[in-house]
Length: 127
Image 1 (cartoon, one colour):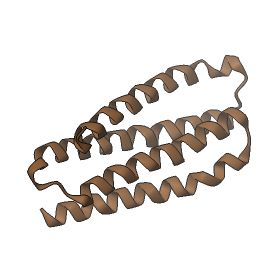
Image 2: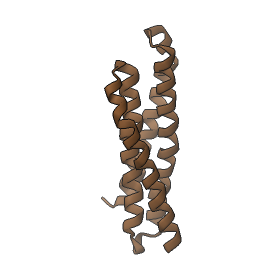
Image 3: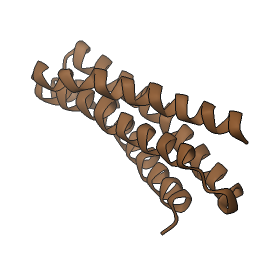
Image 4: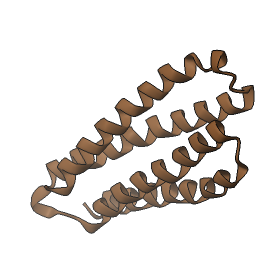
């Protein structure tokens, strides 16, 4: 499968999961989650949505420029995906388990987001 199609498909799946997580967290007060845990979930969900849109955009750009496939665009997509998994994933795990050890992965996810935006910027400057 071409990377642009994969990025579009993965972004759709991660968008779907963000909506499901949002729906579940709306009922989480009944399940005994603390205010801090709900804040972590909402932060994770917000960043997941932002970067799902960015990953989708990378997929669209890849589709439009498929004859000029760029390693910069692929790197942007991979770092956005890694950022979602590390940043949002670690915050979800921390919120659910209340184990702060999961929070140690969060900054690496944030750095992945930054690198994703950096490579997307470089792609834009080279096209």
